[in-house]
Image (cartoon, rainbow, N blue to C red; front, top):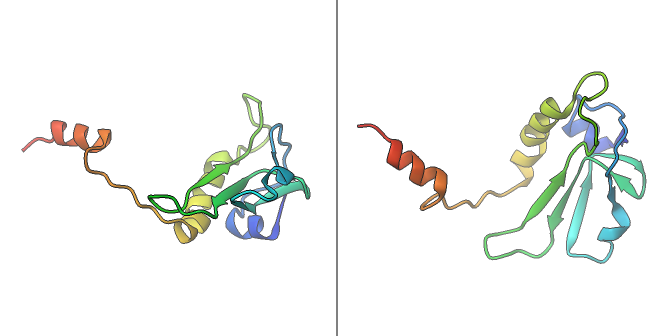
Length: 118
């Protein structure tokens, strides 16, 4: 996988790498998903990439990201995954995503209320 222009901008630490499980871009043709491709081996294999739903759901538009899909326990050279995800969050997700999360009655909020000390 080699960074695309947007990949170089959004994830500047990313260098070329091998992906075992890239997204096959043609599988999204004619679907309700738009792809944002940050690295590609060719026009049909992408990783990392984000699929953004064109159809707003009840709580807004959904998305799913696949990032550095390599089936190896130890990353060769410098492990980009941690800093790469942080760069993705700061440089793309923060600008492009909408977060409509209702915290009321969610497990973390309930547990925080139970554990709160006055």
